[in-house]
Image (cartoon, rainbow, N blue to C red; front, side):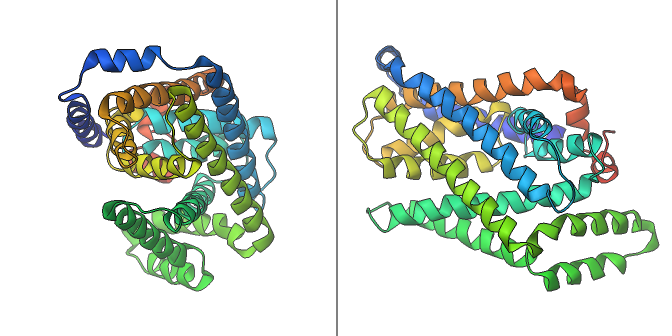
Amino acid sequence: MGINLATGIIIGIVLLVFSFYGMDFQSVVDGLKAISPVYLLPIIVIALAVQSLRSYRWGVLLRPLGTIDQLTLFSVTSVGFLAIVAFPARIGELARPYLISNRSSIPMASALATVVVERIIDTLAILAFFSIVLFSSGLPGWVVKAGGISLLVTVSAFLLVFPKASREWVLGLVHRSPDRLRFLRKWADQFNEGMAICGQPGLLVRAGALSMLIWGLNIVSFYLFFLAFGFDLPLGAAAVLMVIIIIGIAVPAAPGFIGNWHFACITGLAVFGIPKAPALSYAIVSHFFGVLTTAVLGLAFMPSNKIHFADLASLGRLKGFLKGKPG
């Protein structure tokens, strides 16, 4: 994890420097002072609703493997998303499968498969909103290309993961691996079992509908920040900004997405003519509330999950990842 952390920190620092370069700091401060606090409470309520919907959706994806109560799902999801924010290179994505394997009979590899499905469904939902905006407004070429590349990658992942034939082909390759890699076979079998959701269209449609609701609420949250800062921008601009920020934090990032979030936010708002100073004010506040909500929920549920940051960090090591336990 050391190299990933160093890379993420370097990229974050560079993007943070670009974000603050040539900035009129008094204008940034003035922008922060001008924010209308009446919109902040609804933003926090939406964040809590989104976390609840995420945990419920994960329960839907896990249903072919076992039924998990909603409180456990919400607890594990909260700690898992804290890990995503706290650790570089998306290592935190392993936290939820690890924790749910500790609190149920579901193997970590099977649970990880549901997270992979979840991420693909998420991306398809995000791109669906982006496509609607794309056909209704003129956007810069680089935004359209970024969306096209994201769609290509997502469709490729979909074709690799969802069809039973492609999964069986990959599984066959793993089972033909040398004996010294036989530990991969059990892991691959469990991962394939976790893909049972792919054979249940009804559950997939329900998960897809929940994803659309989740990202629709996120768009509303970005729009409420527009209103809080007095930006005269349409709801579609919030969808575009969300996509640009997601792309920005997908590359290696420092803990908390510091730098990546701010630069992507400034870049996205520039598409709609928002000057750099108010855009940075927007980035600071939206980032603060996003990280704050995630941190509070994650820290609140860490004791009940009997896990520490050192345990989460050790999941980045291959041994801990394959065995489904730290270290």
